[in-house]
Length: 89
Image (cartoon, rainbow, N blue to C red; front, side, top):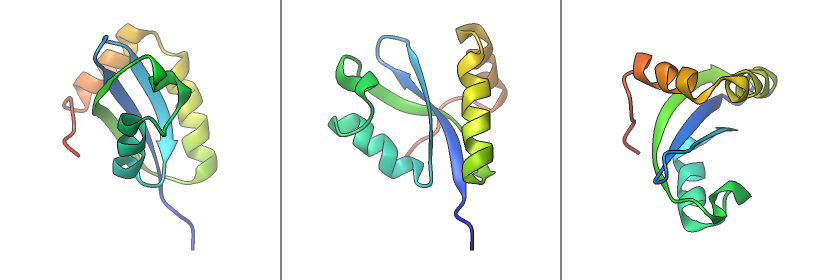
């Protein structure tokens, strides 16, 4: 049985965006908020998961993460807006 992976974008207090993948986005977001997540958050405060794209396997999630990371901030914000904005975890 394969595990479902998600690609997500976190909005930070300084307006920056972080893109990552996880099998449990809520848990991973809590790790980011508590300082146990990515080094990116050592100097930034995560506010909310702004975008989540579920239904991937590990490989497709990694590919999609790379695609999103290549987008400009403007395109990432458009992606978030098209999906309806922030999620509540």
